[in-house]
Length: 87
Image (cartoon, rainbow, N blue to C red; front, side, top):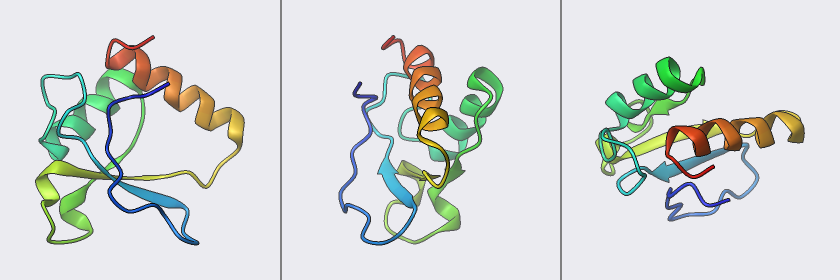
C-alpha cells in the first residue's frame, strides 16, 4: 500500500527512513510537526518531525523507525492508511 510519502534516499544500513510528507492525503501534509501530532492523536502512532534531524526542508520531512517486528510494521501501515483514507 502506498501512503504518499516520498523517500529521496533509501536507507543504507540504518533502521529509519527520512520521508517527505508533502503530498500525503491529510490536512497537515507538508508540516511535519502538525502531521506527527495528528498521527499521535488520530492513529496512536509516534513519528518524529524532521526538524530534529537536519536542515534539509525539516518542516516537510518526518523520520520513522522500522526496527520492529514485521507484524507491527504491517499494523502501522494499516493505521496510516486509515488516517490518510487509503484503506
